[in-house]
Image (cartoon, rainbow, N blue to C red; front, side, top):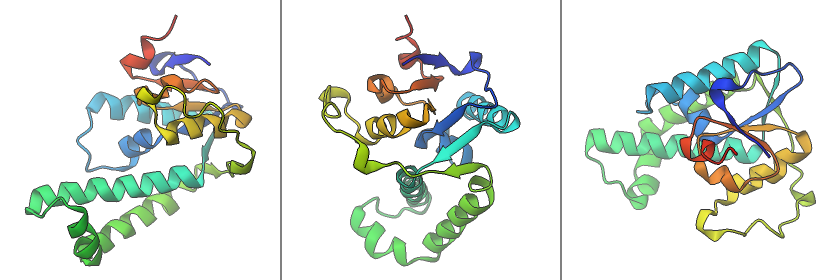
Length: 187
């Protein structure tokens, strides 16, 4: 596995890319207060990937993580703005019955059907073929989804594009990042 600085990577037309949920949020969640340079650099890489006709792949687990993160992030943003409780009970019993929740679902549906599906290739992750012998190693940096993505993307020989330092334990794929903690691991 290599850790590659996002600024130096140039996609080739036969490359395959998997975008981590944080990169999807930088790209598609426009209410986020993300650092401008993160949004710009990851968006620029995605544009290069699309322009070179490289392949962007999307799994069901990633789509689920994106949808849930989007909903939760938007709920917390609206709760701050409107003085709502930031509790799970309020989310489940009140917010999910609101027009704001319906609006979020419609927004997500438009993002997925109009922006993501046209440029992503949907793939099966072949969960039944993954061995979990080492997935729980290094518990201090354990994030199941990140490690799972590494195992799932290895057969595709995919680059994983992320800004998440937890991917330092993912050894099955090359990682493209702007994250300085990950980049400091380059030898």
